[in-house]
Every structure is written in C-alpha cells, then in structure tokens.
Image (cartoon, rainbow, N blue to C red; front, side, top):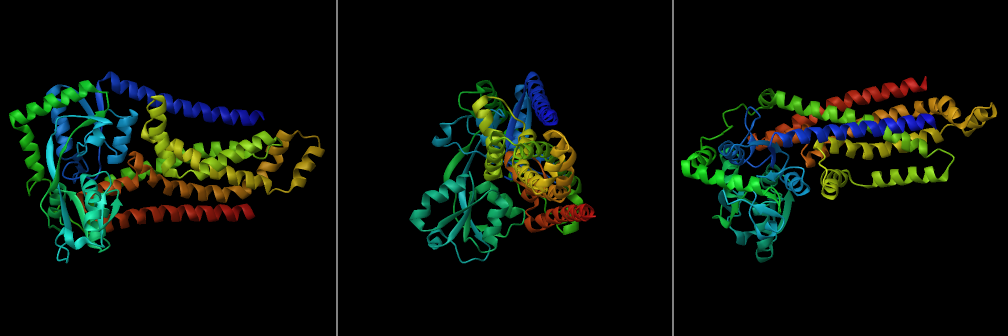
Length: 479
C-alpha cells in the first residue's frame, strides 16, 4: 500500500507542477500586457501560413498593425475557428479575429468591434460541370464549412431549393467534395473563394454575392472592453492613413501571396515544408511521450485498485475505466480545454489539456489491461506467497506483478501506438501537431491529396517501427 501511495503522490505532484507552470506563464503574459488573440488556420486570404510557414493574411496583418498603432502587444494563436471561439468564451484567450461574421445570434455571446470587412456568399461548382444556378441543386448535396457565413446561408435556403447540406471542418475538404462529384456545389465567402481559385482550385463561381455580412473582431460578452476600444480606434486610424487599404489590396490582388510558383510535386512539397512537418512531428511525439507517461501512472494505479481485496476500490477502478473509456476523446478534450475553464475561471493551456485528455483516456485502457494481466496470473501464486508469511503488498509486488508485467508489455507498446494516432484529434483544441500542420500547409497550396499522403507515410513509418518493437517485446516475454 505504501508503494501505491508513493505512485499516487508522484502523479498528483507532477500534474500540480504542470498546472502551476502554466499559471506562471499566463501570469507573465498578463504582466507584459500582451493580449492572446485566436484565429483560424485555414481561411486564406484572411489567415494562412505563407511559403515560409509564417502566419499572414488580412486578419493577421490588420491585428498587428492595430496593435502597433495603439501601443499594445498581441500573441496571435492559430488554433482554428471553433477552438478560438470556444477559447474566447472560456477565457482562455482575450479575443478572436477569424473572418467572423457579425450576426444577432453571435452578438448575444460576444461583443464585436466596428466592422472591418464586408463580404458576400457565392456558390462555386466544378469547372465544366452541369450545375450553373441554385435551381439546379434540387435533390443534390452541397458542401459548406462549419461556422461560416456560407454555411448559414446554405442552411437558410436549402428547403427552398431542395438540396442537402454536408458540413466540413476545413475549406480544402469542402472543395474536394465538389471536385470529386460527391457534392454539386459549395458556398463560401467571395474573397476566400476567389483566392482559392487563383491558387489553382478547379472551381468556378456561378452566382453573385448574396447575404452580405460584415466581419468583426470579437471578445467575450462584457469582457475586454479596453481591448475592443483600442481595436476600434486603431481600425479608424488605419483607414484614415491608408494602411488598411494597403493590407487588403496586398492579399486580394492577383499577385498577392500567391504560391503557384512553388514546386507542387511530392518532393517539392516535402522539401519546402520539411522543417514545418518536422516541427509538427516533434510536437506529436513529445505529446505522445508525456501523455503515455502520465497515462501509465494513472492506469497502473487504477488497475491495481481493481485487484485489491476491497469492494470499494474495485468499484472505483471499474467506474473510472468505464467513464474514461466510454467518453469520446473529442468530447473529453473539449470539456477539459473549454468546459473546466468556463466553470472555474482557471486557464488551461492547450498542451496541458491535451496531456490530461490522453492521460485519462489512454490511462483507462492501460488500467484495464493492467488489471487483466494481474488477474491472469494463477491465483495459486498469491496463495503460495501468503502461505509463506508474505503480506499482501509484498506478495503483489514481489510475486504477482513480475509475472503480470510480462503479459502487459506488448499491450503497453500497442497503447503507445494508439496514443500517437490519437494526438491527431487534439488539433480540435489548437495543438499544432502533425495533422494540424498538414491542414495549415493545405490551406496555402490546396494540395490535399499530396500533403495527406506525406503525413500518412510519416505515421506509417513510425507505427511500423513501434510495431516491430512490440513484436520483439512479445517474443522476449515468451522466452
């Protein structure tokens, strides 16, 4: 029992240290009066990574210019539209600028700045396709991107024109659904669609802009009023001195921020983005290692509780395994990253939230096979150890566990492989791992098939090596 307490204390102290460290970093940021601003990752020309993998775009440049004009600092965090909105609501960040339309529904939750850009929704179809207008969409599917004005507009007219709406999380998948013929058309903001076509997307706009709306910078309702006032003053100054027009023209001009001159072959894409992909891979690997470490501690403790001769601990073990294995990883991640800060007012950095998410989810599976491995040891081993006068704790750690570990090792390595793959889900809370890195690259060059092929090969190589290690470990345990 003493060893269990030592392990439990180690887990608590380690997690406490991580959270305290996160708190100090947030405090330091606040002391420097640096505002944390969230943005999307795939919404060119408003926000995207250029060929040096630096974040640029109308929203990015505008926010930085306003900060300079008003004398404050910003830390722009490309975490995705949904994550940025939720992080703003939960107090994780101070505001969001991501081509966000000002609507009456959103105005109930956010305070918006003065409009900084006016846009309209257009419909685009595959070049040379048969669909040319809204009346031809009856009985067909159309693609939209979640949270956009295009999605809202499509849903508002779908009954009138008799089409079905299919929703995607990013623009590239939406475009590909039209190009492959799964959807007849897509709805998108005009400047975004125009930019994508200039980048080489084989779509064409067939309608005039409709449902005009205005973009605004947003903060949580009733909060960050000083920041909102600074944004409005800075925006007015930029429009007055001509800087605003320069920023917009740079990205909407046909020559602005084009990536068409770059090598679009597999090797060209890999060569151009190797450093960025390596950074995303390192984040994935580091997240996996840290998560599996804490998941192992959590899983071993919960698994051992399940074999103790006390019904309370056995029930607690079964309950924890049931809860954390039953919750979808996506739901658990969003609850930890946005739900807990909303309830407690305590900020949780995305990396910490990701580690805790994987710790609970993967730890529940580890606990299950730890408990199963121990229970698979012949019961006579425990009886023999006790008959020799060994207490339960020594019998467990000296006799049962060494035998159970041989059965657990292969499952543990397999769980590490699963954890490595599960990190991709954490892109939903803005962690810049390998999958999120791929989305960012695709937003710039729109070469979805080639980029995902490269990323798939990276995963396959690493998983193959880990599988060989697992098989080797399994053979060793049989010797």
